[in-house]
Image 1 (cartoon, rainbow, N blue to C red):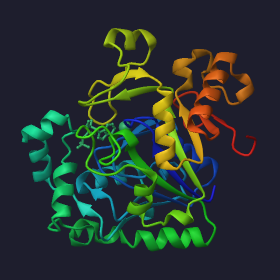
Image 2 (image 1 turned 90 degrees about the vertical axis):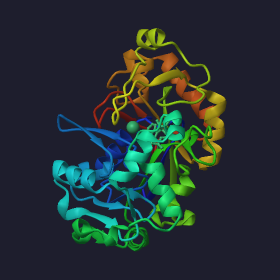
Image 3 (image 1 turned 135 degrees about the vertical axis):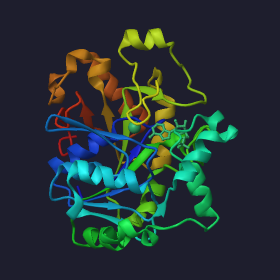
Amino acid sequence: MGCTVVAGAFWGDEGKGKIISYLALKDKADVCVRTGSVNAAHTVHFEGRRYALHMVPSGFVYDKCRLLIGAGANVHVPQLLKEVEETGVKGRIRVDRQASIIEPRHSEVDKSDGHLKSLGTTGWGVGPAVQERAKRSARLAKDVPELQLFLANVAEEANNAVDAGKNVVLEGTQGLMLSLYHGTYPYVTSRDTSAAAICSESGVGLSRVDTVLVVYKSFITRVGTGELPGELSKEEAVRRGWFETAAGTGRERRSAPFDFSLARRVARIHGATEAAVTKLDILHPECKSARSFDELLQDAKEFIVEVERAAGVPVTIIGTGPDALDIIDRRGSA
Ligand code: IMP
Ligand code: MG
């Protein structure tokens, strides 16, 4: 695997957590660096349990994977400590000294500010925390007593791992259409979510990356406000089996069919070299739990070929069910 950046395609919730947990187990990832912040929930099903991780990297499922939170991330200290406890990763998780901190007052502002409310933010306070960081008055991880045992130089560690030829995953959050720069402004999150930004937040330079894996879901969902081309009514979404609620906030997700021209645009901006497609079993129920491409029926295969044509890169990983191992892995055979 080398160094792989995992980046979301559309409005988040593509299933990056599942893909990353699979890669960590399958490729025995040595290091997984989480970027972004607590607003994103990555869902991981592992050993009969479901985790909705807001802070701990999704690579935690592989017990030898070193878990890092990058300098560009914003850390919610109580949530991090809670998840460290839940996942039992205390001895192998580290936070960059310069990661910034979300305080309770940031969440209060996020929930009460009229403008932020109108954007349909998650309410975790990430926007206000980033604002303070940009003003250069935010507290950093190194200033927090509870984090002293966890501090590290994440860029240094991650680059050492790359130097040593280890397997490194850089875990992006949200999707490109929520990027502050490239998304549906102002209905976006407070940071860039592109693959380049994931590298930047981790402190791993672009030339050190071997694979940029863009993660698409077989249909599109979005929470919060803002345009969603081709949006279905809730009734139609339920009928198609596309209706979802958010892993983090419990909010209802809006949904729309896969958008091939948007898929192309997104792949170009991320600089994708490979793609993953999740939840193929929702679009094509007969694919459920398939583990090889040959098992797929013709229309499911055709859908994947269409995605490849749009993205301009091979679809190497296909999700066919919720378990981390419900995957068709075409890497090396494509
Ligand atoms: P904020 O990131 O909480 O400021 O919210 C800004 C917008 O990004 C809102 O539309 C949120 O619903 C959306 N958003 C933030 N994080 C996620 C995520 O992890 N998945 C999906 N949408 C998200
Ligand atoms: Mg999510």
